[in-house]
Amino acid sequence: MRLVLAVLVAMAPPLFSASNWLKVTSPNFEMYTTAGSKDGRRTVEYFEQVRDFFMRVRSQQVTTQLPVTIVAFKNAKEYRPYTMSETAIAYFTGDEQRDYIVMSGVGQEHFPIAVHEYMHLLIRHSGLKLPVWMNEGIAEVYSTLRPLAGQILIGTPPEGRGYALGQHKWIPMDRLVNITHESPEFDEKNRTGLLYSQSWLLTHMLMLAEPYAKQFGQFALEVSSSGSSEAAFQKVYGKGLTQVERDLQAYYRSTSLKGVLYDTKLQKIEVAEPNAATELETELTLTKLVALLRRRDEAMQRYAALAKTYPDRWEIHEGIGHVYWRAGDRVKAKESLRRAVELQSPSWKTYWDYARLGHGDESVIDALKKALELNPNLSEARMLLGFEYNNAHKYQEAYDTFATIKHVTPDRAVPFFLAKAYCAMQLAKKPEARSAAEMAKKYAKSPAETAKAQEYIDYLDRPTRTETGELAAPSSSITPVPNRSSPIDPEIQTVRGALQEIECLGKEARLMITSGTSKFPLLIRDPDSIRIKNSNASTMNLTCGLQRGVSVVVGVIVKDDAKFKTMGDVVSLEFQ
Image (cartoon, rainbow, N blue to C red; front, side):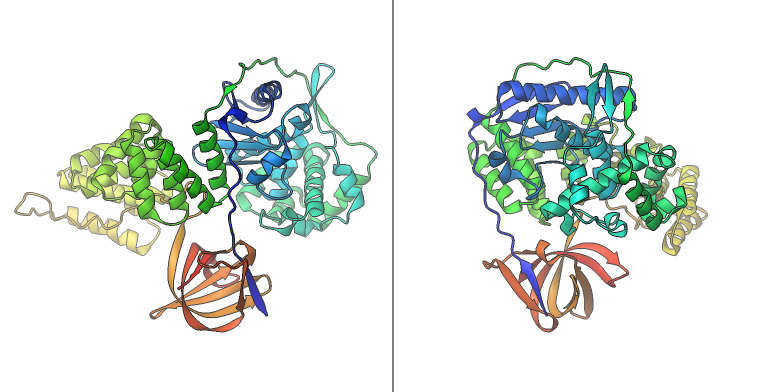
């Protein structure tokens, strides 16, 4: 048996000249489009109307938390170099700074697509972690939003969904509820249509039909918290997947489907006339999309070209830093973000990202202070600032910073209270130190954490002073590591060693890498997604079984998998 790994070769799409692009701005959206002024403006107005509708009829909290950029191409040909997949005619993506909705066209015929993608945005910011079928199903149900006799109707069948359900064999329910974005249903056109169609019908039944509708909100919360659709169906409705599937078949055969009418209208909202977009604006936006699509080599080439023309734009250096970061090169990422900081970025995110990579650097304290100046609610930055002060032996500044933090999550509680106790000891604040140490002991989840807290408490009963006047306190050895994972990707670690064995397990494969006396069992979940860094071939064949111990560098997302008995998922391979 052979394991075939596809080698990803990025082809740079042609750049559009700035004169082809228009920029349309409104209070809650910005759009870059190559379509005409009229259609572009009308589309942004419609996004504003839909947002206003959800704000009024659903909840004031159902809204976006980040700026939203819409990138709308004139036609499918222009859109193709930036598509997420062969079957997607639009998509939603984003990072910690901004949300993006990318469309292959504008105008009224694309309004259902606009609502569909906007629903993905709202779901992202709801805090719910929904499976693919439910995320797509909710988006499909709401995509049918349309005015009707002075009201708003939602719930009519989306175009083509009924036809797909009647023409293809349905996806079994136990498969449907477990589909992910890596599943083949997202790569095959007919199956993609069926996935969307079944997801729409199932969600429509759960949202609008009895006896499901009344408990739909509870069901969504249960799915999000448990991560299992099957368990949620059983807990909330007392039904297994077989019964739900029978109900869905009966629902499909029914003579009518229920919709919902909202006694309101889409409010008239006017948007200013578009302006010509600059080359820098459009190319920064398009390059960011390429980076979000994980085409890193191409993104880096485009950023490098921008840097030659605009060497002193902080946005370019920040973008380069993020590309390096996602590739696992934190040294170069830090260098690029440092340059963005030196260019006085007006974004708190620039300073926060630099601080997350620059632990121990003297400039980190200044970066954290600037991040908090621009975003006072950034509580994680405030905590990290306290630790940086502590590491620099600036105990008064550290203690004062910790004192401003009123709420601490359980996962941060032990290191926070230990550090606060340590600073209090150094400042001879014995009661405050004891109180903090007791809190650390209360939240301790391991024997090591309990022992460290007790060590502080025992020390407070017999304090001594050094010749310098500082308390000879126990070391502050438990320090929380800030979240230094990429703004988009999971954190990628590097494993260097010898490839000893490839064990093929069907679609998946388990690699055994050795380094000295250490062994690293690693999982390849999808061979087609693995990036081969130093090969010019389109594919690489690896024979299953014992290997010759060739030297490899493996990019890994650290993630234990009990089923496969592995400690991480492989994302890249480099043969030495």
